[in-house]
Image 1: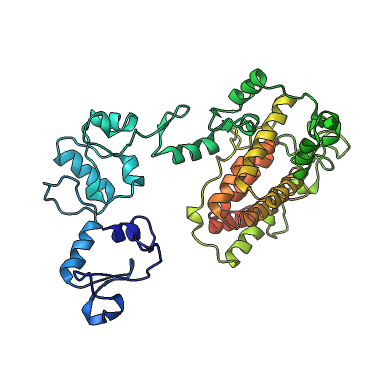
Image 2: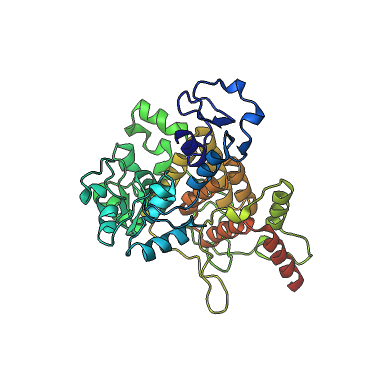
Length: 423
């Protein structure tokens, strides 16, 4: 049973005893016969998927039964079901309104017949307190599925809740650096309130430059500060500042400057029929053999549009102090994901170039994807964490559109061709 559980549920072929990988195993009634003495005719039944050979047909069939969706009620004589939904429906109808825990079904590494049936009164207690609250014989130590107090959603365990909070909610990077772990805030408004009440935020944008405050830092602090430059450079060409794709004059002003906006050729669609950078990126993806884009994670929602179909304005009235706090927290999240200092530096260069428009959106997403070793799940996490480093809503929307269209290159290319014909 341990071997079967490891191979089927935990997706590993390591030996339960010595941990060495066993590509093939034999299910037998003879515990003394050496493995190398078994011949093909000794084990005529074989499951190729899990690498298991069986001495008898009875062994083979009994094993197959364990892998099906069987009712946990030991007295139930119903046949196995094709899916979890069918099993849950059977349990509710045939066993006096009994219920199964969806979180346990999706996450617990046990066979279907090993799950617990709950009454309508027991299931909420199972979620909140664990089974010991109504079953004195329970010795598992399970104390319930933890809940996100912001979303009112429960998760299988602490790891899943932590992952949810790390992506969906905010953490104070200053508190984390002082050893306060696993403290989260619902959104940036809550985090900003925490900053104002618990910390002293420097009001000067130049404070991120080490030489501005170096006189008050120790030598160790200055060395630590200089290891990774987390300041995003906003010099040079400025990002677009509203939904009309306006671009600020590239003078020596800050990223929140109010210079007269101008338009450049990059703000207008191509009308010569040639594919743009985004569609070229899709072609490169197709040539590299990337498949199963439909399983890639979505990065976010498409930008809202008004009745005429135009994007909502990308204007932000956020105060400068809030912007600095938001940038610092966002970059801290990205650094925690990337971990490697060299990768953090590379990402800083990419996001700076993207904000300054020296790197277009398709190239930016492409390079981040490569930085994340072409792992779609990890790339989505990094781009989501970096979302608040980009103040311009149009640029943020561009990233979301490019990433989500990479999930379905066929429809993306069709859309590109249609737009070119219309132009």
